[in-house]
Image (cartoon, rainbow over all chains, first blue to last red; front, side, top):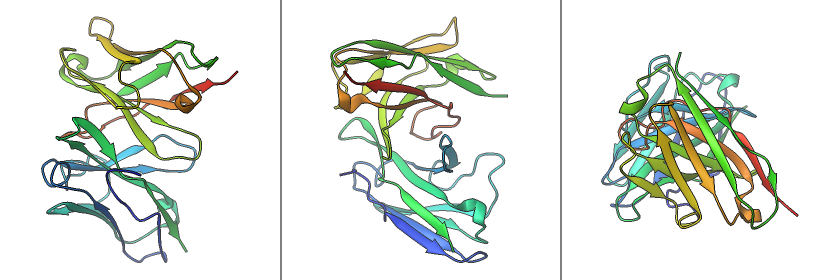
Length: 110
Length: 119
């Protein structure tokens, strides 16, 4: 049981938009910045979003992050088949004094 | 180019010990926290441990506290994970990452080193 809750899977057609939710609590998302990671099949995770809504250099603006209260959302527009991957949210939990991840969401581009 | 490269993974018997290393390059190592994350076969990401830039503060997941020790040598641009009393539940691919999960996120990840605990 992960501290951060994500849907196990989402799907959408190429060119469409999809959102992935990440639900936490006041001691993690409600209190700390959220980051998002993309893990393509058989590869290491890659940072997509940090500090709730900032993109590292090289990440296209099709990827965006937002946060409201104790929930965060990753949005991907203009879906491509190459976006098929597992997506994870993460944050520091000030009560646990530990980093926590969501269970991951598998994105399928139909 | 920023890189982190893990090494030290192996097959080890339950109750055994192992030390993982992570060599970093391409950035000012002593200004970044560093983190270990693991992924069991077919499972999601699990944070294991982080160390601050100076090495003065360390943090551990409950599942490894008291058994694992994270450390760093800023003169060698390397971090370590000493793992003792290994159990089958520690079987995973262990990733090293630049940064902490706070405001910077886990910026760059290595390819991982595999630890298998089995008799």
